[in-house]
Length: 306
Image 1: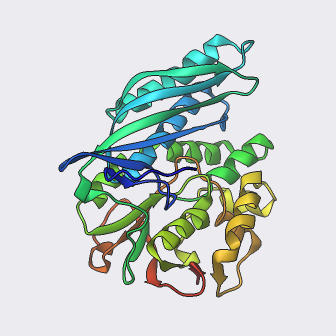
Image 2: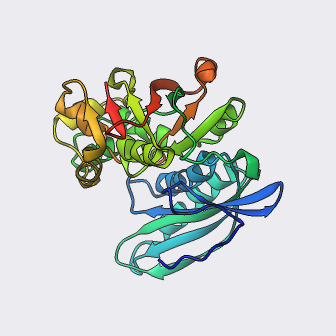
Image 3: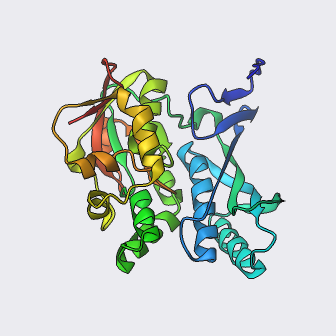
């Protein structure tokens, strides 16, 4: 893409961050992001709500507060309009929960349903939490369990237990607002949310942007109910294979991993948790998350699995 200098662009696309940040004044900047995807659950209302939570997550990952959103919709003309009503209602109510106002949107006719939002938030220019801020000596904290992609695939294959699907949906419906508010109380240096590229993919982006190596202790990771079992049974989404093919070259594995655990490291997440790099002294104080590793000076590989 052509590039033109703009001194007000505080975060652009150079570091593959969660959102762009544009300075308006010395004390106010906009956070902008967009996200949409095809249905991942059967219920239209829940799909709309998850799509909203997922789109909002990028603003929270930047340390921002979402204020407005525009709807993005692709809809098959012959699809039941009652389903569309439920999708829009689910998304609208989740946006209302976040204190984010829907201003309008745009739709196109398409054979495949796609739904999501472009979200605008605000942040103080001095309090941006970019993915490029991780420092050697930091602790790594993660705020959700992993496995939404595998559980969704197991659901599509008809092998997922109802309770496991419910746990995955509950996780995807949970806004990262509380996690954002909590982390802003501490000395956080960098943050990203873990979504479609999986834990390894987004950790890789943080490591490269920060010029560090992230060490992840696999035994500390927490997985959604059923995720390990379904991964062992081969219920893995196509995006997982794509993530592993793209990012595995940046990973040094220092121990033998069960194939299902290794697969889940690359599992594409929907409305996943925040990966937070913060001062070691604050790691034990932060609530709503759990420690999964540490930040090291840059080594040969961007990610180290121990």
